[in-house]
Image: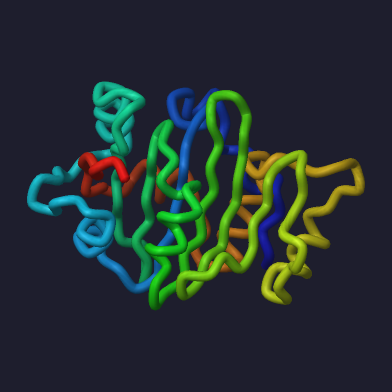
Length: 193
């Protein structure tokens, strides 16, 4: 069964007030949290295991000028949560991080700017920017899913569901509230690029 944007209505301001307003979720195949942190220039030994609640609290304590993230293993991927962060929306970082693997990310900031990216082997394969459109070429892997989520009423915002549906299609991981809240994340600050 293929998810629809409505299946992700649980990701709301009511349930996740400090996260739904501004977040970045990134999935990277074939890495552990420690290897991901090292690839980003961080020191895994300085990272601490935390729940989602503690991750969000620590992120806001660290301020907006730091790249604070939490990473956990989900299947064969590392899943990164950045409350009010944006490493997964930086094209230079994500293309570099996708070397030898596949990376999928979606991002929303407090001003409502939203992105979705798919990068593979250091090449940006597909992007989706709310209110502006999609990449000129839509790969077959996402073409059918884009048709299914097109309501004919203009572009949906990625955080209204399409980004979650696309991420599920490209990663095989269905993000659920249980996965998000029940995971333990390796958390810390990545040096600002």
